[in-house]
Structure formats: structure tokens, C-alpha cells
Amino acid sequence: MNLELRTSIINTVGTSITGARNSQEAMQIAGLDYTVALRPYFLNQIGSFGFRKTSNLKQAVIRTDTKEELGGVGMKYKPIQPAQCFKILDNAIGEENIVYNQAGEAKGGFWIDMKLGTDFTVGPDENNDKIEKHIILINTYDGSSSLGVYLIASRLFCMNQLTGQSQMFKVRHTQNADKRIEAGTAMI
Image 1 (cartoon, rainbow, N blue to C red):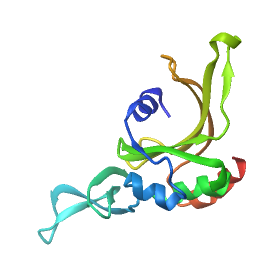
Image 2 (cartoon, rainbow, N blue to C red):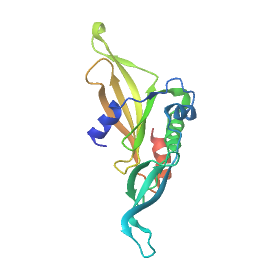
Image 3 (cartoon, rainbow, N blue to C red):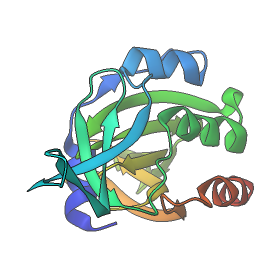
Image 4 (tube, helix red, strand yellow):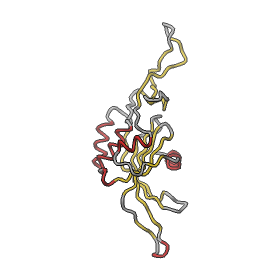
């Protein structure tokens, strides 16, 4: 994932989901309890029966609740639903170890931030900097990137908020996404 996208998502103010008892509740609080679907991508050409032609190369991704178009993607694209993303985190880490922090929508998709329970400090005793560990899941529906799960360290009260980041796993939106999600979840 490119730095510009990651920065724009992290800097987007989300909704606090602190206190959510499970992924379903966190999804509802953040307004991410929706599904997406694929629809034909219509061209500005009229076909033989007077109807607009559809693309053979591209399809639209829409939210099923609002009918909002989130992006145009290739024909092999299979969307990974928000509920699947929350389930990845529940299955991989276990709800008892996650403290939901915040979540929000950005760039034709969404992000989820969970704080891991243990903080650590860096620096001399009188000037310790508190470092929080977070897991961030980022999922887009515009074809710009794959679903990604990142482990980051967040340094409070400092210009360098994200001090370290490593990708835990990445899954492309394809027909084999479910298998890759299972394999990736086992790696976390």
C-alpha cells in the first residue's frame, strides 16, 4: 500500500468504537454493517436493442444499502465484505485481546483500528515516551489496493505518530480471497 493512501486513511478521523463488546457491535457503531455487491458497468454506447452497453472489462462495486458506487474494478474482482474483515480479527486474535479503538470510511473503503492491550515506553526514565501497539485493517473497494492488516506502533504526543509498521498479511480481492484470508489469519 502506498504511503499517501496509508497516511490519508490514518489521518481521517473515524468513529470511536471503544467499548464495543464484539465485532458486530463495533461494525454497527462505526456504520460499517453493510454489504457490497458487483453490478454491470455501463458504457456511454447504445446497443442493438436501444439499451446502454455494459463493459466486458469492468464492473462497479456498490454499497447495497445506499446504492453508492465505491469503485470500478476488473472482472475477476470479488469483494471482501466488511463482516469478513472484522471476522479476520476476531478469529486471529480473539475478542478478549482486542480493544476496539476507532473505525471509519476512506477512499472507497474503510479502516479498523484496534489497540493491543500492552503498551511500552522508550527513553530515559524521566522522559519516557509511551508507545501503543495497534493493528490496522484497511480494505478498499475501488481496486486501488488489496485488503491489508498492519501492526503499527503509535507514539503519543509526538510528530512521528506512526513509528513502525509492518504488514501482517495482504489479500487481493479475487475468487480465492476466502482461502487466502484463512491462511493469513493463521499467520497472525
